Image (tube, rainbow, N blue to C red):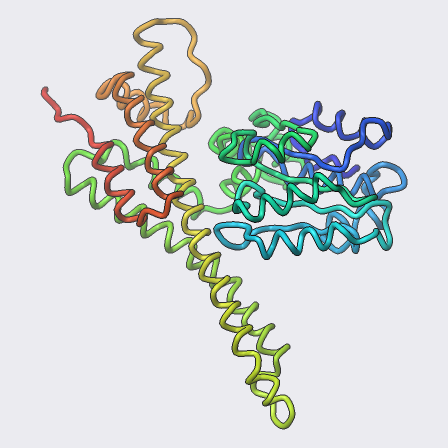
Length: 391
């Protein structure tokens, strides 16, 4: 076992990172990991961080490897945004951490997940650090793509880019069976239904509620036969996303709030009372961060639903084009819903499928621009409405 075992279907990436560890001439102070959701950007960055600290290049068994992968190594900091963005305050903390000399390991390593969420001020602070890098410091940024909307061109130009690809379905299924002990049939289905997202495949295989949620989303396109049905579907999609975010937030918020209250001495008697009264601002700041995180979780949940819808319309487009032009069609994103995709193809055709994909993408953009979810999704479901049956 090595630190690279968690990377699925990324042999080329592993070869590049191993080469940088073995050859000092191939090493640099800034790395940019790109790839679609679920491809393993942060997994690759963490594995690389462990290999950099390991005397043997990432054997996976030494103290350095274990602590890095567990998130407890003193010289490896992982920045994971809780809210909708990474602001200037978080960026300044990142720069401060990067300026420290390593205390235990060979490098001071900073990993920034979802670096595409940096605000302009945060990105400028990081850019200045990359222009004048501290010695013995390595910064690893993780973003979905190299598009300027995801990462500033000036930051990209100062990083070595490592591009991850969508893992093959067979590779995902093998990992679910061998590493997670999941039944082979379930693993194959989950891998095919996950859209190449390893974490989601594991979630679908383990959680029946996740499978039911996916089914509810994919049932939507063929149900949109009237305006009332469109509005009801929008209500259901928004409500399901809110319920999921509420459950996830509840699991995190309570423990965080109690921990802060305990550190402030809330409920204490004697001298602790004064300290607790001065901690009201900290509790208010925590509540603000928790609300921001809940908003992000809700948007992430809704975005997963929109990606699933777009993929089903993509399948309909593939089948409609196959019917018109013949030839062998590429694999479907939702192979278990082939019958639904075929019915959609028959009812809306290739042009209708393409228009509906554009509508889903427009909805995702509207949500990113802070349009109220209910309004954005209602507009979407109306745009997805099926044409009247003329038979």
